[in-house]
Image (cartoon, rainbow, N blue to C red; front, side, top):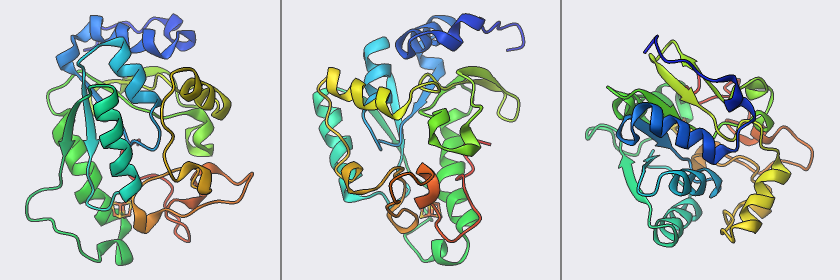
Length: 217
Ligand code: SF4
């Protein structure tokens, strides 16, 4: 892994070129593309760059019905090769999110992600700098020293306007909650709409100091 050189040109490359570079570098079967399905952009970029590439969804057991609708819609429209990662079989819907969000995110997001990434060489995410202050310096590509792989954020430089334009240009459906004030969409117990101009992730774990689910450490 240490012999991989990340070309500086990736920083300004089109998102599709970033995914293509990763597929050529590591092999498509060595990439894990995780999509939250809060929008259609990342999955369209990945499926266009490498047709048939596996798209991984972390099913926390608490996805909005509207998110499940978008998953089905895009899977059909784009003929996605979808892999759904579930929590361990003994994890059932419970009230953990009311008392310990860190533990809840760990068993429903972090542990399934770690399983999905095990043995792989690169991870492609939908992280954008415009998501909020905790992501403001996200690079397009960098070594993830914690996980021992290359992490790619092809949409890092995409603004909200870029996202909207991409959806329009490619005639992709929007998430049904996007025009209802949900600027960032995760699990239903931990997501609320935000006021115009608020930090996009202010509606995640509202009232709690938590700002990230533990995936993007
Ligand atoms: S976002 Fe909330 S419901 Fe979803 S896994 Fe984390 S704590 Fe649990």
